[in-house]
View 1 (cartoon, rainbow, N blue to C red):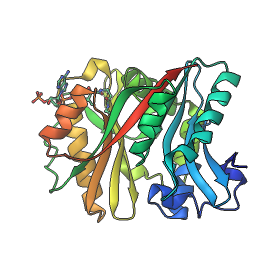
View 2: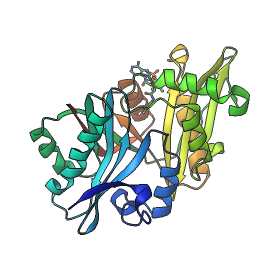
View 3: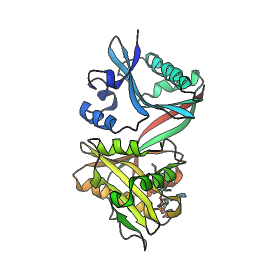
View 4: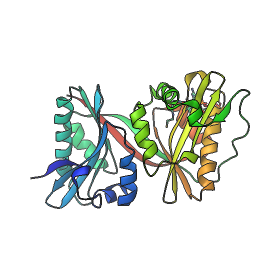
Length: 281
Ligand SMILES: CC(C)(COP(=O)(O)OP(=O)(O)OC[C@H]1O[C@@H](n2cnc3c(N)ncnc32)[C@H](O)[C@@H]1OP(=O)(O)O)[C@@H](O)C(=O)NCCC(=O)NCCS
């Protein structure tokens, strides 16, 4: 009988990592930086790990993110992971479950048959060419070290900037400490911009193998449309290409028009599309 268990109860991530095209070590590094209410789960059946997803506990809508299944497994056999996610969502008193798919689009019609509605498409964009130089910052804006800004003020700005962004999760100081202590965290790939009133914008990237990923880019509402988003994007792409990565990628919700326009205008091109489905419970 297939059953769902946390990744932490598996002997290792050897069977989970290939579902995400990662090495076990790279996936373990990622998982070490997950926020407190985020955890990987696997559906284990006769063939071992048959599917996996990342649970995100949220008061209003729980999320089964990056639901991936083993190659050759019929899509309906991944559904117990979704059913278990629905029970877990109800048990936490949340009213909705969002399921985002990872390379398994044929699960979509099965989710639709269970009453799920397609609510968002997430796009992976790639920068094929060299990055442009960031240029100069507006007067009064400068880069600053995180220790000078303070983690709490930094997170307050970041959470305010991401408040309406699909798929974004507010981070607590504990979440940040986990991320900053994880092996994949690179202090040299974080840039925080400040003005005389405090933190204004930031970008954070990671390096995995020869690919650099821009994980988070945000500008506080009071600093928007001044060119800071473009400056940070160029800074990040240049920093990644300088540490010998061959490509730069990022994910963006299709409905996030400001970010999508920015990325397209900087030369990022569509690589993959992943769907996100949602259902009231
Ligand atoms: C996306 C974001 C980072 C842009 O930052 P910004 O500093 O306001 O953007 P810039 O001033 O550098 O503008 C650069 C380009 O972005 C696009 N853009 C910015 N705001 C836009 C808007 N409201 N509508 C449409 N396009 C917009 C434009 O192409 C703009 O170029 P232009 O000025 O030549 O027209 C900012 O809106 C933000 O923090 N949003 C919330 C967090 C977020 O969505 N992060 C990305 C997650 S993937």
